[in-house]
Amino acid sequence: MLFESRSQQSTTRGSVKCTNEKTMASRVLIIMVAMILTLVGLAVGQKELSELPEVKGYKLHCIESSGITESAARKLSAGEAIKDPDQATKCFVQCFFQKLRLMDEQGVVVKDKLEAFLTKLMDADKAKEYVGQCDVRRTNPCDTAYAVYDCYLGKKAKLF
Image (tube, rainbow, N blue to C red; front, top):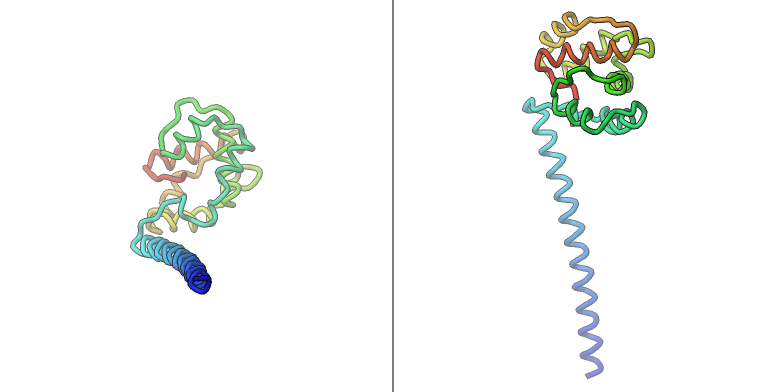
């Protein structure tokens, strides 16, 4: 009986090891499937700004640095217009554009980088057209950034 007990213990340990290996294999498979689906989605042309690798972490940093309200941040993310945006909202947009290197610290839009960035989200000809049409300048970098964002929003181009 003592021998059977040890044999059963060994079998139980083997089952735990086998279960852990199966769990790990399942996790790896899930990660691989998610990666493949992401790549297929990008190849088919389903592009969202939030899927672009350079965007990760930028929103959180800019929320903290600008002091934007939660409701304004939600509206920007949803692509909704904000009537009479406050300075924090405008500076959030400016921070985001700077993080993406689409605007310098003086509030000047870097047109070639903006165009290249937009081609990740839309047709190249449309991106070039939008860059030309939304070439605006205001009194300070935050106001300029928001005016550029508002121009793209008017063209139904979602940038957040």
